[in-house]
Amino acid sequence: MRDAPAARVEPPLPDRRALASQRHPDGARLYDGACAVCHEPGAAMMVAGRPALPLGTPLHEDNPRDTIQIILQGLRPPVSAHGPYMPAYADALDDRQVAQIVAYLQARHGTGPAWKDLEKDVAKAREEGE
Image 1 (cartoon, rainbow, N blue to C red):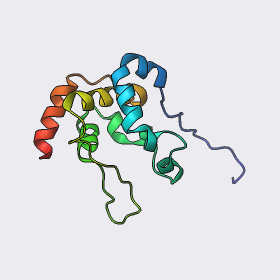
Image 2: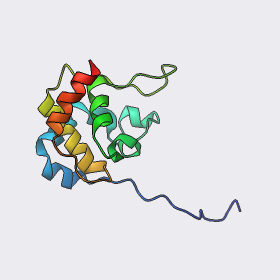
Image 3: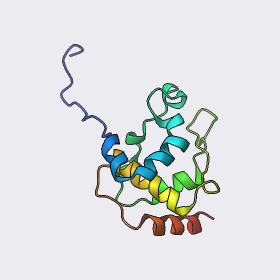
Image 4: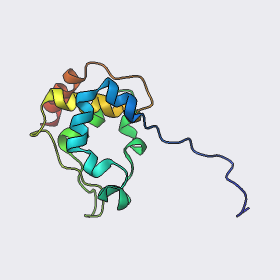
């Protein structure tokens, strides 16, 4: 059994970078400036074993709420300093910019239909997160 091929092979993670960049050029530029340094292949965070963005469940949910909150509030290690960390961007990005990044990420890595009314969702998430 040790040498037998796996019965089930996981499908490759979605990465539609060119399409997402074409559909959301402002989101792609913002992502490249604020996010790529940590989230692209070869980045220090990725080399350290942090999960790739397409593995995160928020990009595969029916609504953008969790993705938006992660960008606004960041992530803190749950137990020790060895967990994932991401800075909060609530003070650095406005609602339109966050919405553009979310639209780009969902188009690039998401598996469901495109999320609508993202600026409204970001404004609501800011209110909920305060």
